[in-house]
Amino acid sequence: MINDARLEFILSSREYLQHLPELLEGIQDINWPKAYRIVEFLNKHDVEVAPHVKTILLTEDTVWRYWMLTELVSKWSKNTVEIVKSELLVIADVLDIYEETDLESLKILLTKEIVDWPDVRSLVVAKEETIHSGLSGFTTEQIEEFKELEKLRQEIIQTDTSLILRFVEENEQALKKKDKYATLSNYFVSLEELKNKHISTE
Image (cartoon, rainbow, N blue to C red; front, side, top):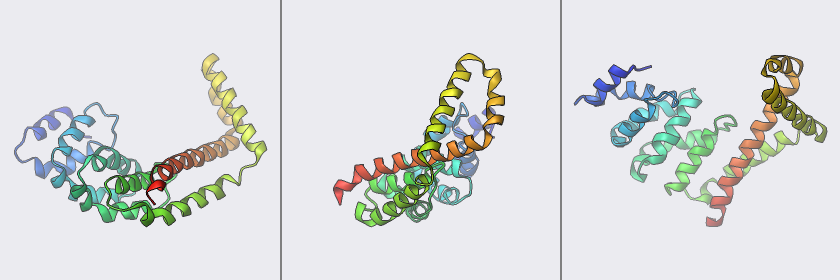
């Protein structure tokens, strides 16, 4: 991770262009205290930054990719976003239930009016069907168990956190299923929000 002194040097350098890859590495973790200084700087130079972002958007690092989309690409003008259009389309096509980078890409493409809702409707419907299928694999009894586990987890957190490790160990398999159900459910909510926002334009 870029250190504070190095960051100050780059931000004040006339040769900042050659340091763009290093600056982009500085926002792999947006929780780093200086990350938003980098974001602010990079968004002032979006045209120069875009070719570097193209490469990052197709890496396997979905968290870094997520920050590229939400903190940089979504803030750019339509013309600048056009530079990474092909990468956004590739990301949009691949289901990402964990970071939801596919939905972020679709949101940018639709918001910037680079694609229209009819262009992506079938893709969204296919995602919807996949998530429906995943959620239907959970029984009513399992969902009730998940609710009870969450209730118990909250009680432990509020009363005696020393019991949390034992709780996790005793319920390991059920908690893994609970996490999968929660991930699918959260993705479905995000998908429906995207669909409801743009379906009226069809």
